[in-house]
Amino acid sequence: MIPRFTPSMEWCDIWAASSNSLHQDHAVASFEAVFAEHANQEYAVAFPYGRTGLNFLLRALGLDNREIICPAYTCVVVPNAVVYSGNRPVFIDSSRDDANMDIRAAEQAITDNTGAIIATSIFGHPVNLDLLDELRSRHPSLPIIQDCAHSFFADWDGRPVHKEGCATLFALNISKLSCSVFGGMVTTDDHALALRLRELRDAELAPATTWKTVSRFLYSVAAVTAFNSTLYGLTLKLQRAHLLDRFTKYYEANLIDMPDDWLDALSNFEARVGISSLTRLGDRISARRQYATYYREKLKNHPAIRFFPLPPQADASYSHCAVLVSNPQEVRETCRRQGVELGELIEYVVPLMDAYRDTAETAGDFLVSKAISNRVINLPVASKFVQSHADRAIKVLLKVLESQPPAPDLLECA
Image 1 (spheres, rainbow, N blue to C red):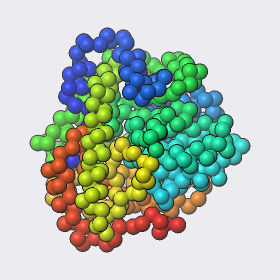
Image 2 (tube, rainbow, N blue to C red):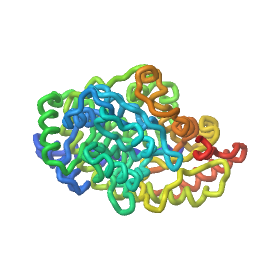
Image 3 (cartoon, one colour):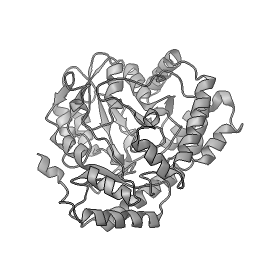
Image 4 (cartoon, rainbow, N blue to C red):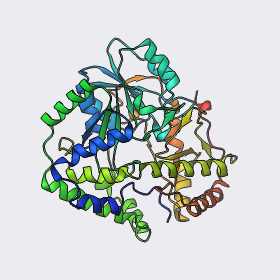
């Protein structure tokens, strides 16, 4: 079975984290320093989850009972963190030009009570900084938060997206381009903001317990084992039987919530995993770009599959190699039976979820977001480019697509 992805955490990271190569008391601070260096930013502040970091960032910005503009098509943990910070998400549809938030529609939604804009680079596709520059020129005092959970160090016209805002959010679970088991990181060049963020974190997060360290270690071992090529078929069977939901399901459609331990600090074990994982981040991004280029070249003329457009300014880092098909569930299931797992991405539009349907501040009807959520799949990628795996995935997919209708065009969603 070719998995939809391979974890960014490997046995070498667990071994490094379990050794005494770093002083236990300084691991988190060391992780922050190394991450800031990789990001070429002055400050990095570590949190137990990315959503915890966003919650604390909004409060460090002094935002309370304000409107926070964010994509309708995004991971639901983002607006959940907004709500838990005492603010209200305002949802904006995706652009017909890509899967990211429509920047022009976002500007039209700005009011006197708008506190910030969260600009997400979904799938690793960089947000259009030219349009964002225009918005910022007309609203220079409005904070822009870059959500780079999917887009570690993606560029737009040579400009690193994560440096184009007051702060940037990174998530660090096993599906992301770099991993600290769980965990999140906020980066910024603003000294006062970093200081306030640290003050809030240190005052409100409980120290990581011994049990948290042990449980993170056990989770790490289980996660890496589960993706072993010999065992992965069993992992899929357990997942399809919902026996792994406790570890893989990250939201409830009818609840706005946070993890039980979202206010427990990042453990030193996780920090050491994060430091080790960062040493191979450049290689992983390179491999993802190789997969994306290869898939685009081999599948570019097939009518039943459509790639998201990427303008020449965009240098994506590809957390996912996302494509559109007409019947994603049928395509995924048929490919799975032939030994290729295709990923299911964000299969919802947040303001249309039960938890948000009656309470969300909305702007638009979310036609593009709905089209993406109903039609998107992701092709298999890995930490190292393996051409034989890519060729096999392409061969299986081409066979399955023979019976599929033409893929939808986002331009038709208007």
